[in-house]
Length: 132
Image (spheres, rainbow, N blue to C red):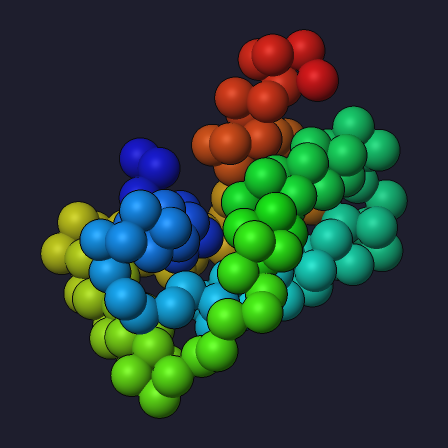
């Protein structure tokens, strides 16, 4: 279930912003998602996760966070955009609870990725299927 990852919610928000469906800037969400991915990258390197999985994470970061951030970098973040991010996070947490997707499953997926070197993230799996 791809929607159990908050990054995809933020990317969807970015697409809606670019298409002028919403006026609320997703830059704060993209920065949050990029920061969490940078922490994940550091942990992956620390635990000597395979270079291939690190490459896939970097590619995913480029596609879902860095390029979108680059395209809206010079835009301003309004107070309302920050509140929309907070609201989106709350809705995400409620969605996860309602769908019985709990933090321990998410953590187990990250442990599988980092420690056991299993590709557990949806976009990384798709990129791997493309033989990248």
